[in-house]
Amino acid sequence: MIILTGSNGFIGKNFKDKIKDEVLEVNQENCWSFLREFRRWKDVDLILHQGAISSTIEKDINKIHAFNVDYSILLFEIAIKYEIPVRYASSASVYGNLRGVFNPLNYYAISKLQIDYWVTDNIDKFSSIQGFRYFNVYGNGEENKGDQASPVSKFAKQIKETGELQLFEGSDKFLRDFICVDDVVDIVLNNKNESGIYDLGTSNPISFQHVAECVSSKYNGKIKYIPFPDHLVDKYQDYTCAKKEWDDHKFITIEDYLK
Image 1 (cartoon, rainbow, N blue to C red):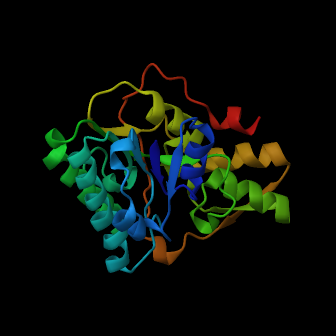
Image 2: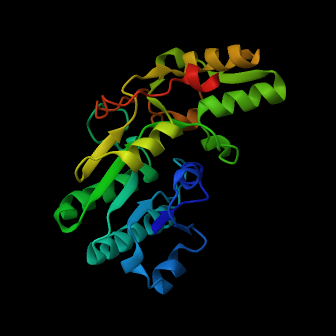
């Protein structure tokens, strides 16, 4: 049996579609009652912890801490007790705008870094644990993410609805490491690495401008440039690039995905 938290989320649903074993789904609505009531821990082969408050603009620090930190630690302590392997979602947001150095820019990123620190301090207690700092994930199933959707999906939606996509001015200078959710699921489920916390991205960042041009070309849309919003100043990562951790994996490109 595999416990999958966040199974209703974008990435969680993609895991659920690929797992062939019995899956016990845990979501925000039932996560606390699950911890109180579940008794079959000895039947669990793996915990895939993907659930979290993932909004980078969420201001309720108590809510974020409860779900992203407190809940994760309680779940991981159970995993230690019953010697259950864990694979969990961290985030590249822990790096902020510093390359390879921790510099979280919002409460969500801070919560992810807190868990990474806790795991590092307790890593020898686990039978196996892997954390994955997801970079900018895109792919099928983003329909309900709203403003949190990747630019690949957001731009496509805008063109389909209005004939044009909206792009921040200066987007040729904003480079991100975009990774397809299919690659995320494949690596998390199938890698043979030892316990540790890994970057999970392509290590090949591209600009928002390039993404916009790919999507506009695919859907025959126009690009409309808009001013960069004041509320995102100093809160917006202008560059992300994963450490090279997966040289043996052939990543899907945005051009491949759009085909």
